[in-house]
Image (cartoon, rainbow, N blue to C red; front, side):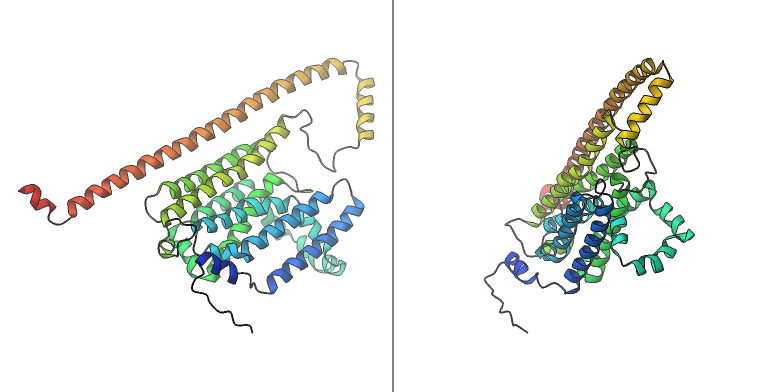
Length: 376
């Protein structure tokens, strides 16, 4: 075993970077095995349906797996022990970046096809066809339950008691990360809706779904930014890095949670809105008719009904009006979200400013000797 000589001149950042790459062998081994299973399943599906399973699925899964390794097995994990800003970067990756990127690779189906046939047909097929499991999946993957699980987990683990528990115990820290990943996959499932799953809600319902999630993210971020005390006591006594005080580190963590976190919600919201407002906003996927079948249906409908052209023009007019109305609703929703964010910021500033002024007056009134001087 090689002995590492500690250098007292190294700052905490260098020490964390130097000593945090010694990860357990099972982490890269499990990551490599998972990727090999996914690559095998992707190749089998790619040979069957090249129009559905392209290289973007493989790249998305590889990117998500790489980011997951960076979040839990890189120096970022150790830096999170002494810097709330680094810890918040890790949380943003686990909750808002890694799950949607991995889901874009349709991992549930590809991983099943990557397993050996004996395991897939002999063990998993009877288990996956079990009726109680199907009912449980329907309950867990309902959008309301997905949203509540994600928001509840985020708020619960960012309370000082739970956050400090995770910082003091490696076991609870691992439990925290597992909770973040599991609930984040549930949350992003109805947003990404990987093929061949079917949506439980209409796509337009994802707009308030994402806006409300962004609202709670804004509230929590604003609390960290404008709070005039260190919320998590561990970071008050941790070694200072990047030349920032504990409060500055906390404000930077809130800003990271606010800006990239809001982008993680608003970017898919924008793509969903654009797709819904596009003329071909129907479901796109393998279940759509082929171009030849669509042309045949169009020819049949045109020859069968002489009033098809006027009716189609009327439907296009109604559709254009509906799209414009929908665009107005989306713009109003985004504007309302911006107003709510500004209101949260204003209320946070006023609250902490009043709280700071009130605390100063109380401290001055309790300072010994000043009361007697005023009486004199």
